[in-house]
Image (cartoon, rainbow, N blue to C red; front, side, top):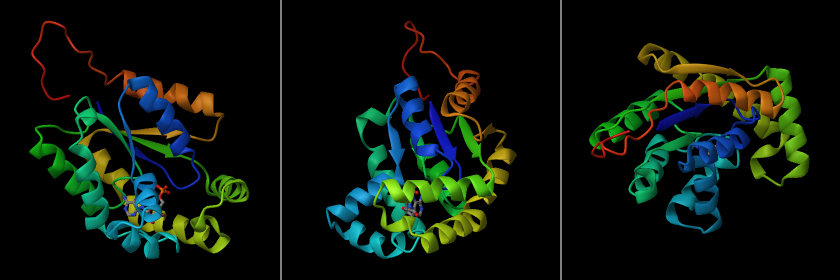
Length: 201
Ligand code: AMP
């Protein structure tokens, strides 16, 4: 199963994505985590990404697309995967469709975790106190929310048009949110038939 997970910073997307990837048994591809690792390892991609990430801006589309395209070569993605933090822009969404089409596949569902703005700010400030992320300063938080609004929210229209958008209310407890997510993906899940030849998910 191939799933895109949309939702603004602070919506709890990371936590829910880990749970969902365990539930479905597919890898969790977080471009944020992959870019932070590249940054720590000081790879050429990581060094370039750092300047954009620390201020709360997006890395260039081609860079995010490259990171995902590389990761999709790994055999563990054959059964499907969960994209967290990717795509973040309409051009990235178009590239993702093209990348999957080259592999004879397409997305099954786009989950959109919806949380009110004041609650996002509260959660982000609380996370900033607990973790030491360079992009969780008050200025960077404001900037990331603005960037999300401007660059990523158009994706809800994009996936609505394709007919795979599923809004999820993220204001409740993590368990309540996950129950809705399960419901949204269970409706789209196809279980492998032991007698059928393997094909695209
Ligand atoms: P995240 O952990 O998803 O909040 O991502 C942390 C940071 O990594 C973002 O604020 C961006 O700077 C960068 N990033 C992650 N994914 C993408 C993406 N798909 N496109 C552009 N920048 C990204």
